[in-house]
Length: 144
Image 1 (cartoon, helix red, strand yellow):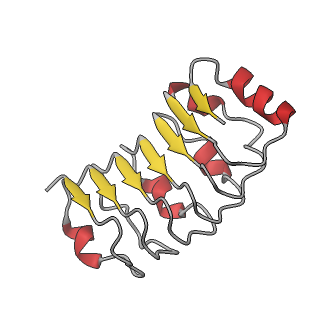
Image 2 (cartoon, helix red, strand yellow):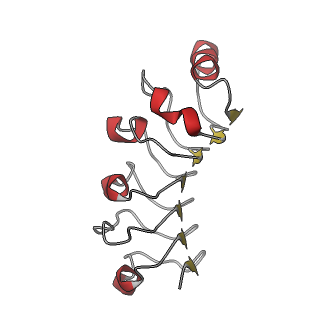
């Protein structure tokens, strides 16, 4: 199994059975009630994780231990900041923070040069911050 879609199931606790899916590449857990994730480091092949509209107050730190991860969607979660480890994560292709509480991206986002898409809609970013982001990521499609 390399794709699992558990969107809209009112899941509050991450299903531990998923940790046994070592070939998993794509995991959708949108519109649930998750506020944390267990250690996902065993899912070495995971490339895409979609966690939109859950209850995460911060970016789950376990995501930093996923070497193949290229796509992360944390839209519509009450996240206030992007951690340094995520700002330093190379190889990312798509990030979405739409509708979060983020008002500023980390000062150094140069590791994100491989990003194709950055979703920042419905954020309270200053005009200066938007200009700084665009200048830092000239080849990335950014949606404000």
